[in-house]
Image (cartoon, rainbow, N blue to C red; front, side, top):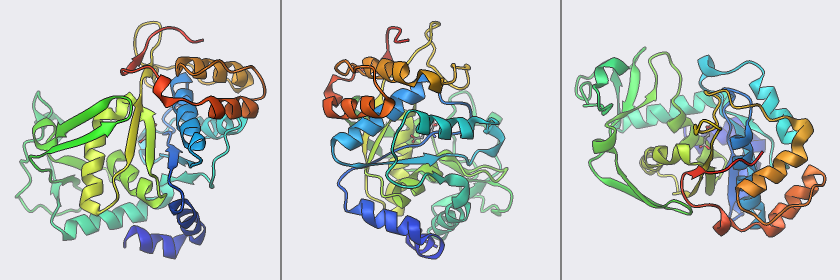
Length: 310
Ligand code: GLU
């Protein structure tokens, strides 16, 4: 099954959306994982991806990345949905959930298997060695695919892209990483595969997200190339840090967004992105102001944001 067959068979609504967005030059997205509640760093990503899309008369979609079931944090999915509402973001299509696409990811894996681009692997993480580069031990063992991890074969070749903020980025997957996992032994589809398939499924053209994902991009470009999907345009935002100098993240228990403070938090997010001042108002009007004044070239360069915005 291809993405096109999946659309035709499963969701005429999604297919219609995709046809609509394919007429748009810019389709962006916000793709949080429900592994914890949204925090100020997530708000920066949501605001930047929203304003960048809308300022270019593009569409903005939301996708909940809920494939990693063991890491789902109870209540965080409803927190994400409540925040989208409370901060008055207006997605241009119905919010989609990756857990509804498992059948499609399996079909894409099968397609890669038929092309001999993936193989089953029984190596554990501990066997990777200190450099974390996978040596390809299982590449030619011809192991059965049942209940094994699945890895994709990579090439000894530079993958380069021009990030709108971070500049030219290059990575050689064979030298930096080795063949990487697309499906874990426990059956969970890896984020890299799901994100590439869904960006294509939703007709995404532009990705605006945190710089913590910068070094995932070469893997995603490579997978997109194998699958014949168009190349996306990337902008990786500097990350907000906490008082201890760590990036705000669900892992270090960043404070959950308090939607009763939506206007103040939006104002702080625009300040962090170095946009012109935004007058306190309803969230919808503040976002509108932010779109009108949006200037991506003002976003601080680098991968971290210094200073306290709250
Ligand atoms: N789901 C990822 C996260 O919450 C973001 C994925 C992406 O923007 O590509 O960190």
